[in-house]
Length: 161
Ligand code: NI
Image (cartoon, rainbow, N blue to C red):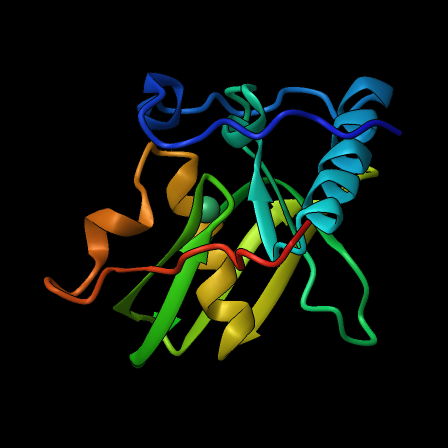
């Protein structure tokens, strides 16, 4: 496994539309593992392939619960229900947070790392993370959806020496 570089806001690649994966092979599995490792390195709850410079429809999520990391290929929201007001950030926007409305519940169809068709139902934080990461695959960023005036920039602790 390897930690990949995370692309930060301002890079045009984050605005591009990602292409579907045709075959889930070892190369894709390697990418999924690298993305999980990279997400963990930066304490993120999710990461999408364009954030590591690869325009493929691949996301990973980890809520740091019993479930462990979720790896999804070609994820697509097929149902959504309700709304929740959330605060969120993004590994491509370090130290920035904003409020927005996300669906309270989503059903996502995808392929797993073996290439099998699966469905994932997410509520609360999982619904939020799925919606955020799937947006990345269409070049949509959390700042596009924020409630105006809610963007907060948190200064890094100065005592980290
Ligand atoms: Ni993000």
